[in-house]
Length: 244
Image (cartoon, rainbow, N blue to C red; front, side, top):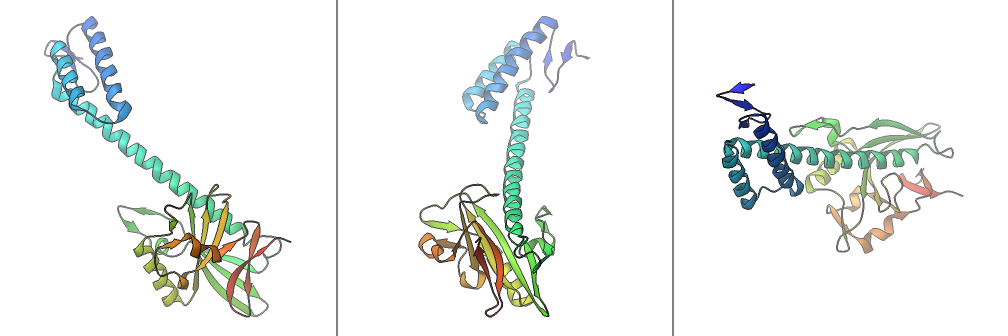
Protein backbone atom coordinates (compact mmCIF):
# COMPACT_ATOMS: atom_id res chain seq x y z
CA UNK A 1 0.00 0.00 0.00
CA UNK A 2 1.53 3.32 -1.04
CA UNK A 3 1.28 6.20 1.40
CA UNK A 4 2.83 9.63 0.74
CA UNK A 5 5.38 8.10 -1.61
CA UNK A 6 6.26 5.29 0.77
CA UNK A 7 5.05 1.85 1.76
CA UNK A 8 2.85 1.22 4.80
CA UNK A 9 4.07 -1.88 6.66
CA UNK A 10 2.46 -3.79 9.52
CA UNK A 11 2.48 -1.68 12.66
CA UNK A 12 2.45 1.61 10.72
CA UNK A 13 6.08 1.83 9.57
CA UNK A 14 6.78 4.14 6.61
CA UNK A 15 9.69 3.31 4.30
CA UNK A 16 10.67 3.87 0.68
CA UNK A 17 11.48 1.26 -1.95
CA UNK A 18 11.68 -2.51 -1.76
CA UNK A 19 15.34 -2.77 -0.65
CA UNK A 20 14.83 -0.18 2.06
CA UNK A 21 11.66 -1.95 3.14
CA UNK A 22 13.41 -5.29 3.54
CA UNK A 23 16.35 -3.74 5.40
CA UNK A 24 14.07 -1.80 7.71
CA UNK A 25 11.99 -4.86 8.47
CA UNK A 26 15.02 -6.97 9.35
CA UNK A 27 16.75 -4.37 11.50
CA UNK A 28 13.64 -3.23 13.31
CA UNK A 29 12.26 -6.71 13.89
CA UNK A 30 15.64 -7.78 15.25
CA UNK A 31 15.62 -4.90 17.71
CA UNK A 32 12.02 -5.54 18.72
CA UNK A 33 12.85 -9.20 19.42
CA UNK A 34 15.71 -8.04 21.64
CA UNK A 35 13.24 -5.95 23.64
CA UNK A 36 10.75 -8.83 23.84
CA UNK A 37 13.42 -11.23 25.10
CA UNK A 38 13.52 -9.68 28.58
CA UNK A 39 10.18 -7.86 28.44
CA UNK A 40 11.69 -4.46 29.33
CA UNK A 41 11.98 -1.50 26.95
CA UNK A 42 15.17 0.13 28.25
CA UNK A 43 16.42 3.66 27.55
CA UNK A 44 19.33 2.19 25.61
CA UNK A 45 16.91 0.24 23.41
CA UNK A 46 14.78 3.33 22.91
CA UNK A 47 17.88 5.23 21.76
CA UNK A 48 18.71 2.43 19.31
CA UNK A 49 15.15 2.43 17.95
CA UNK A 50 15.30 6.21 17.57
CA UNK A 51 18.53 5.82 15.61
CA UNK A 52 16.96 3.20 13.33
CA UNK A 53 13.91 5.41 12.80
CA UNK A 54 16.12 8.25 11.58
CA UNK A 55 18.15 5.90 9.38
CA UNK A 56 15.08 4.53 7.59
CA UNK A 57 12.89 7.64 7.56
CA UNK A 58 10.47 6.15 10.06
CA UNK A 59 8.45 7.71 12.83
CA UNK A 60 9.93 6.59 16.14
CA UNK A 61 6.57 7.16 17.87
CA UNK A 62 5.03 4.46 15.64
CA UNK A 63 7.82 2.06 16.53
CA UNK A 64 7.52 2.79 20.24
CA UNK A 65 3.76 2.22 20.01
CA UNK A 66 4.27 -1.11 18.23
CA UNK A 67 6.77 -2.33 20.84
CA UNK A 68 4.60 -1.29 23.79
CA UNK A 69 1.58 -3.02 22.24
CA UNK A 70 3.57 -6.25 21.86
CA UNK A 71 4.87 -6.03 25.41
CA UNK A 72 1.35 -5.54 26.76
CA UNK A 73 0.05 -8.48 24.73
CA UNK A 74 2.87 -10.67 26.08
CA UNK A 75 2.17 -9.65 29.67
CA UNK A 76 -1.54 -10.44 29.28
CA UNK A 77 -0.73 -13.81 27.71
CA UNK A 78 1.74 -14.67 30.48
CA UNK A 79 -0.76 -13.68 33.18
CA UNK A 80 -3.47 -15.77 31.54
CA UNK A 81 -1.08 -18.74 31.40
CA UNK A 82 -0.34 -18.41 35.12
CA UNK A 83 -4.04 -18.21 35.97
CA UNK A 84 -4.80 -21.21 33.74
CA UNK A 85 -2.04 -23.27 35.36
CA UNK A 86 -3.26 -22.42 38.86
CA UNK A 87 -6.81 -23.31 37.85
CA UNK A 88 -5.65 -26.63 36.38
CA UNK A 89 -3.73 -27.55 39.53
CA UNK A 90 -6.73 -26.62 41.67
CA UNK A 91 -9.00 -28.78 39.51
CA UNK A 92 -6.53 -31.68 39.64
CA UNK A 93 -6.44 -31.63 43.43
CA UNK A 94 -10.23 -31.42 43.67
CA UNK A 95 -10.47 -34.55 41.48
CA UNK A 96 -7.95 -36.28 43.74
CA UNK A 97 -10.12 -35.50 46.78
CA UNK A 98 -13.38 -36.48 45.05
CA UNK A 99 -11.91 -39.91 44.30
CA UNK A 100 -11.43 -40.46 48.04
CA UNK A 101 -15.21 -40.29 48.42
CA UNK A 102 -15.70 -42.75 45.60
CA UNK A 103 -13.49 -45.63 46.70
CA UNK A 104 -15.03 -49.12 46.50
CA UNK A 105 -15.07 -49.25 50.30
CA UNK A 106 -17.04 -46.05 50.86
CA UNK A 107 -18.75 -44.94 47.63
CA UNK A 108 -22.14 -46.36 48.62
CA UNK A 109 -22.18 -44.07 51.67
CA UNK A 110 -21.26 -40.77 49.98
CA UNK A 111 -22.97 -38.64 47.34
CA UNK A 112 -21.40 -35.52 45.83
CA UNK A 113 -24.23 -32.99 46.14
CA UNK A 114 -22.33 -29.99 44.81
CA UNK A 115 -19.02 -29.42 43.09
CA UNK A 116 -18.53 -25.69 42.69
CA UNK A 117 -16.59 -24.21 39.79
CA UNK A 118 -14.36 -21.15 40.26
CA UNK A 119 -15.91 -19.02 37.52
CA UNK A 120 -15.75 -15.21 37.64
CA UNK A 121 -15.15 -12.14 35.51
CA UNK A 122 -14.11 -8.61 36.48
CA UNK A 123 -14.41 -9.48 40.15
CA UNK A 124 -18.00 -10.78 39.77
CA UNK A 125 -18.51 -14.20 41.35
CA UNK A 126 -21.38 -16.61 41.49
CA UNK A 127 -22.57 -17.12 45.06
CA UNK A 128 -21.64 -20.81 44.79
CA UNK A 129 -18.11 -19.89 43.72
CA UNK A 130 -17.61 -18.32 47.13
CA UNK A 131 -18.72 -21.50 48.91
CA UNK A 132 -16.44 -24.47 49.69
CA UNK A 133 -15.54 -26.59 46.66
CA UNK A 134 -17.50 -29.69 47.62
CA UNK A 135 -20.73 -30.43 49.43
CA UNK A 136 -20.94 -34.15 50.20
CA UNK A 137 -23.72 -36.13 51.81
CA UNK A 138 -23.02 -39.14 54.00
CA UNK A 139 -25.95 -41.58 54.28
CA UNK A 140 -26.29 -44.83 56.16
CA UNK A 141 -29.77 -46.31 56.59
CA UNK A 142 -31.88 -43.42 57.97
CA UNK A 143 -28.87 -41.34 58.97
CA UNK A 144 -27.79 -38.42 56.73
CA UNK A 145 -25.23 -35.66 57.20
CA UNK A 146 -23.86 -32.97 54.90
CA UNK A 147 -20.16 -32.08 54.90
CA UNK A 148 -18.35 -29.28 53.06
CA UNK A 149 -14.75 -29.50 51.86
CA UNK A 150 -12.52 -26.74 50.57
CA UNK A 151 -9.62 -28.17 48.55
CA UNK A 152 -6.20 -26.51 48.62
CA UNK A 153 -2.92 -27.67 47.12
CA UNK A 154 0.42 -25.99 47.80
CA UNK A 155 3.73 -26.92 46.19
CA UNK A 156 5.75 -26.09 49.33
CA UNK A 157 5.78 -24.11 52.58
CA UNK A 158 7.83 -20.98 53.17
CA UNK A 159 9.63 -20.18 56.40
CA UNK A 160 7.99 -23.02 58.32
CA UNK A 161 4.59 -21.43 57.67
CA UNK A 162 1.95 -22.46 55.14
CA UNK A 163 -0.58 -19.98 53.75
CA UNK A 164 -3.84 -21.84 53.22
CA UNK A 165 -6.15 -19.04 52.11
CA UNK A 166 -6.77 -15.30 52.30
CA UNK A 167 -8.55 -13.59 55.19
CA UNK A 168 -11.71 -12.93 53.18
CA UNK A 169 -11.86 -16.55 51.98
CA UNK A 170 -11.51 -17.89 55.51
CA UNK A 171 -14.24 -15.53 56.72
CA UNK A 172 -16.58 -16.60 53.89
CA UNK A 173 -16.15 -20.27 54.75
CA UNK A 174 -16.79 -19.59 58.43
CA UNK A 175 -19.93 -17.61 57.56
CA UNK A 176 -21.08 -20.50 55.34
CA UNK A 177 -20.48 -23.02 58.15
CA UNK A 178 -22.44 -20.91 60.63
CA UNK A 179 -25.32 -20.04 58.28
CA UNK A 180 -25.78 -23.47 56.70
CA UNK A 181 -24.92 -25.44 59.85
CA UNK A 182 -22.63 -27.68 57.80
CA UNK A 183 -19.18 -28.63 59.10
CA UNK A 184 -16.44 -27.38 56.77
CA UNK A 185 -13.05 -29.05 56.36
CA UNK A 186 -9.91 -27.93 54.56
CA UNK A 187 -8.43 -30.77 52.52
CA UNK A 188 -4.83 -29.68 52.04
CA UNK A 189 -2.26 -31.26 49.76
CA UNK A 190 1.40 -30.27 49.96
CA UNK A 191 4.26 -31.16 47.63
CA UNK A 192 4.38 -33.61 44.76
CA UNK A 193 1.74 -32.92 42.12
CA UNK A 194 -1.76 -31.58 42.63
CA UNK A 195 -3.08 -34.88 41.28
CA UNK A 196 -0.80 -36.87 43.61
CA UNK A 197 0.46 -34.81 46.59
CA UNK A 198 3.29 -35.98 48.81
CA UNK A 199 1.40 -35.02 51.97
CA UNK A 200 -2.29 -34.82 52.81
CA UNK A 201 -3.98 -32.99 55.68
CA UNK A 202 -7.60 -32.71 56.79
CA UNK A 203 -8.26 -29.64 58.95
CA UNK A 204 -11.61 -28.82 60.59
CA UNK A 205 -12.35 -25.19 59.71
CA UNK A 206 -13.42 -24.39 63.26
CA UNK A 207 -9.84 -25.07 64.39
CA UNK A 208 -8.38 -22.47 62.01
CA UNK A 209 -8.18 -18.93 63.38
CA UNK A 210 -5.78 -17.58 60.76
CA UNK A 211 -5.40 -18.15 57.00
CA UNK A 212 -1.94 -19.66 57.57
CA UNK A 213 -0.61 -22.38 59.84
CA UNK A 214 2.81 -23.35 61.22
CA UNK A 215 4.11 -26.71 60.05
CA UNK A 216 4.55 -28.12 63.57
CA UNK A 217 0.84 -27.47 64.22
CA UNK A 218 -0.11 -28.88 60.84
CA UNK A 219 1.37 -32.28 61.70
CA UNK A 220 -1.60 -33.23 63.89
CA UNK A 221 -3.89 -33.10 60.84
CA UNK A 222 -1.73 -35.25 58.57
CA UNK A 223 -3.37 -38.25 56.93
CA UNK A 224 -2.12 -41.06 54.72
CA UNK A 225 -2.22 -40.22 51.02
CA UNK A 226 -3.26 -43.87 50.47
CA UNK A 227 -6.61 -43.52 52.17
CA UNK A 228 -10.32 -42.83 51.75
CA UNK A 229 -12.93 -40.76 53.58
CA UNK A 230 -15.41 -42.04 56.12
CA UNK A 231 -17.67 -40.41 58.69
CA UNK A 232 -17.44 -41.30 62.36
CA UNK A 233 -21.14 -41.52 63.17
CA UNK A 234 -20.53 -41.32 66.92
CA UNK A 235 -18.72 -37.98 66.72
CA UNK A 236 -20.04 -36.70 63.38
CA UNK A 237 -16.44 -35.97 62.36
CA UNK A 238 -15.11 -36.60 58.89
CA UNK A 239 -12.02 -38.79 58.98
CA UNK A 240 -9.64 -40.51 56.57
CA UNK A 241 -9.06 -44.22 56.88
CA UNK A 242 -5.88 -45.80 55.44
CA UNK A 243 -6.23 -48.61 52.93
CA UNK A 244 -5.90 -52.04 54.57
